[in-house]
Amino acid sequence: MDRLMGLDVGDRTIGVAVSDLLMITAQGVTTIRRTNLKNDINELKKIIEEYNVTKIVAGLPKMLDNSVGIQGEKVLAFLEKLKKHVDLPIELEDERFTTSISEKMLIQADVKRKKRKEVIDKLAAVQILTSYMQRTNK
Image (tube, rainbow, N blue to C red; front, side, top):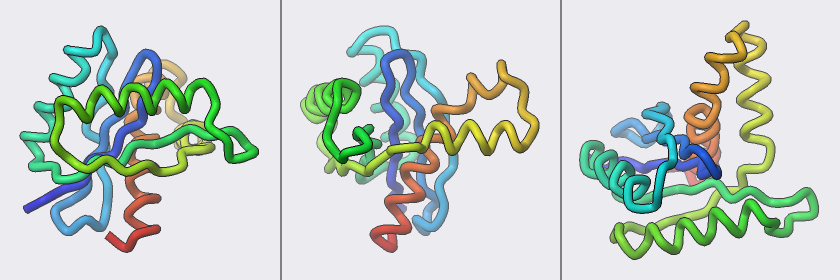
């Protein structure tokens, strides 16, 4: 069965989530520590193959005025490079506030700061993918 993959692309890490087989929920898979483009893409390709991913949903960080800022441009540039190595559709999902929402959830759950840093990007990817699935009824 097919799955969706959610990405929270940052400068140092990429949070990764995948949908369940019914595309109802999203689960965090991993946080990729970015080293170089080749390794980053190879890590993503392994996950795509392992989970039989058929579409990627990437968070696009936007400014409060809905424009795409510097970080958004970096994400778009990375996705353009990813498209050259992965033959899957890539859709964008507004990711404003996903990291801050994720951090608040972890604080409320009394997760220690060190542990929060380890899981926050993965949780943000879950939020991005969940938002997309709810919006599109996937």
